[in-house]
Length: 298
Image (cartoon, rainbow, N blue to C red; front, top):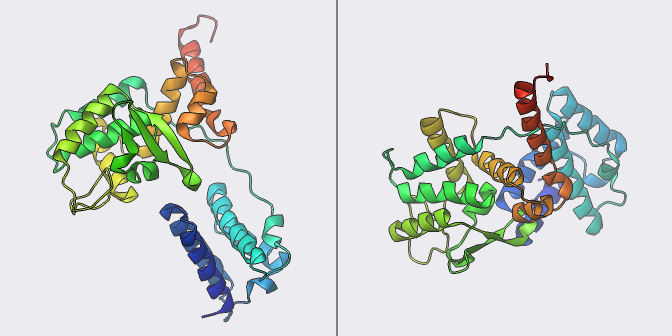
């Protein structure tokens, strides 16, 4: 194994040691594996200490030549920067040249958001149990949690039984960077959870709230597949995914008068600027109403 490969493995081991999310570890392993492959084209790759600014710029140029979008390039660049930052702390490299690479600007894309009517029709359609499925109570609870609490799919699958206070209707959620927050849930979500807990079949000692057919924790991928299945059958829309319900949660709260700071806390956003995109969604919707209804709009 080359020195660079060993350095990457040491960094991945460090991520596992500090309990980084499985999603982060999986993506960084993949991105850094591609980084290693790029420098292995001519044989043994050099150690990170021999990768100067010119070499890293050539690698970055290779990403652009693959016609990757800005979001993908930003993620791969973040993985390499984090690797070099780790190696600098370990004394393996001196300057962190990756930190000096220019980050491509991400396009400002507004999320497509379902209306309240569309969202409620989907969530209620799952709860109606008109579709033959092995775990209808669990599936209904998934949709109530995603829309009723605005959870990321990783936060959903990470929920444990002891994260819930059913008396006060609060759930403890572990977000990005393992930051914890408390999120309230409503009566419909509470009722769905009560029905599910009465039907839950888990293996002995399993702490996860949501379990799969083996009685083990339901994975992110499993939750995505469930949402995709119902979205296709109930709404006929293949584009709906778990984050669509999070977008709907935030946008509908804002439309009904919730302030931006409160929504930021509920979503677990580190920066208010991340939450502010939902104001743009609301303004876009208002402009559509104006263009359609106002006599002077045309």
